[in-house]
Amino acid sequence: MIDDGAHGSPDDRPSGTDPAHDARAAGSASPAGGTASAAACRQLMQGGSKTFFAASLLLPAPVRAPATALYAFCRVADDAIDLRDPGEPVDTALARLHHRLHRIYAGCPADHPADQALGPVVRRFGVPMPLLGALLDGFGWDAAGRQYETVESLYDYAARVAGTVGAMMALIMQTHSRDALARACELGVAMQLTNIARDVGEDARAGRLYLPRTWLRDEGIDPDAWLAAPQFNEALGRVVARLLAAADTLYRRAEHGIAALPRTCRPAIRAARLVYAEIGREVERGGLDSMSRRAVVARGRKLALITQSLGAALVLPAGRRDDLPPLPAVAYLVDEAARAARPAEQSAGGNFYQRTLRIIELFERVAERNRGSQTVSG
Image 1 (tube, rainbow, N blue to C red):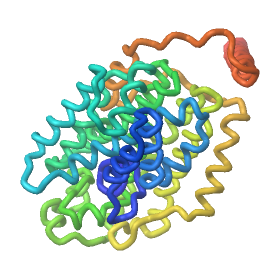
Image 2: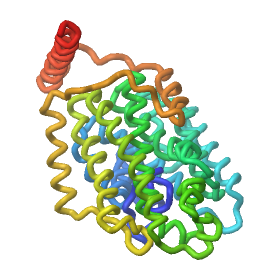
Image 3: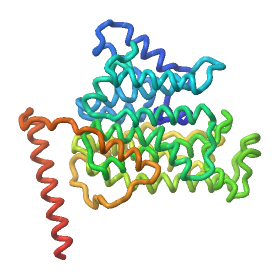
Image 4: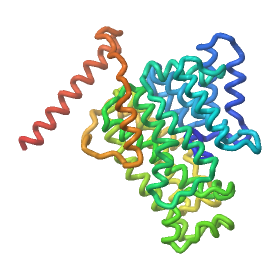
């Protein structure tokens, strides 16, 4: 999802704020649809996810704007479920969101900045509706208090609330290979697992438990008894460590996907990958106790990681693998994204900067083929 405070999504939203209200206010400031909607979406991201906002600044402008619109709709949809009127059934709120989604794809979006901004994005980049539909269903799983017995069932959840965002971002970056789409989905899942490991205490105090229940039982912890009186101990720490290890496996796989992205997009995505993985390291430095403290990456460390990510655009990636099967939980997302109609290729024209990038990327592909030939012949 797009809120890493309540799973959800990756977000560092200050408590007490209502981004959905902020977006409505910004959108109503001007009747000029596109401009006002875009401004509202930018405000929503800046006031919501600090990590996503910082990483988005590294994206080229043609990608940053649609990515911001996507973020805004996800954020508002999440709030529509979490902040619904007391007593309103989850299914009712979810049905209303699906109706809004259908209106967006029918070309008559609701009068809301996020809906208005998302319409042109899904049309231009061929984002299939089932991806956003799966995301909304994941929000519904959250609100319904769904339980996760196994890590595989947790992957199913993370695929919906975060893997979907990875797939849609890949399409916005005009990346269509199945392997790259799989890695994008897995990066989203990894980020969600990191969120869960970091927020064990916060979730427990809200009556939520995302850790795989079988893992807890393996450590002698009764999930329901623990949730009634949550506390940290070494056994719980081992479960958190196990979840972070699963996330790290997916972060390493994601590196192969980042290498497949357009050169100008790699730094932003690698920055998000590095910063989120660092949250896991902070949890470890805190003795795996995410009950009494919430791990935060210090600003200086975050800036250092973002600076480190800039090299992703300058250094020819090595070791890229296109033979990794997707995590089973994201396979259907990859299928949906890969079936999406590929937008028309840009003309051979463009400005000097765009033409130069195309030439550089051509040399990259030639170099990769040459490396492959040398490996075979060697």
